[in-house]
Length: 305
Image (cartoon, rainbow, N blue to C red; front, side, top):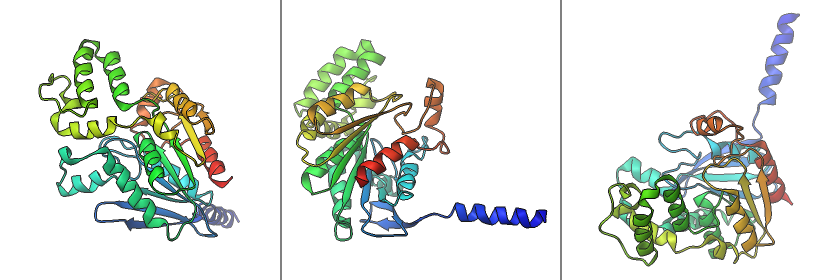
């Protein structure tokens, strides 16, 4: 009797955990690889395209030594709510694997063009496409939405200030002795001029090979760009984000008054709910900590309404 009950529980558990979506690995081109999650009941489901943040970030939201699975869990959470989701590795991931990275050739617009490539790839199958951009990916999403029709735009942890301003603020805060040198370099880069002589202490940020990217990035003010949006916009910011302050979301909201704004209580930059600074820092290395359920629910409601 006890054995039969145990077997029943095991069978029930396996059934309860059965996924209601299908996972498909896809290649958009030779260097853009991604994962599509599609609900098994496909009745004109919307498609959310996830755009990752800065750096060599993969489809799951991970970097080499920072595995947190933030975008993986976000995608799976939305798929469980019968929303198709495509997430993809940034192009630099494939280039790093092949040893073909040319840092001095990379521009901010490359990320926008890759997002457009992905979106346009799916347009034949999906009529309702939503862009979800995280961190730097939020600005990429905004620019992509200006170039190809999409249904809605979601910005998660996106900055409202120009990236040059944010870099300057970070240097003033963490290395005030370098602020004057940083201002000099930033002023030249904002003019589109490359800088030859840079302090060794600032080289990791302003090295010659990354300057073309910075120059192209500094051209865009997120508030000016989001103000151009004519589609429904959802601005989301976590209250425990150590990288992007709440004021950045407020700047975006002021620029796009019709947008919906949500502060997710306790959520940090990588979409996890934490309470202490120690928990916050440790979450960047915890691939098992789930993405905020409140975030997933809010996004699903916005997409479906």
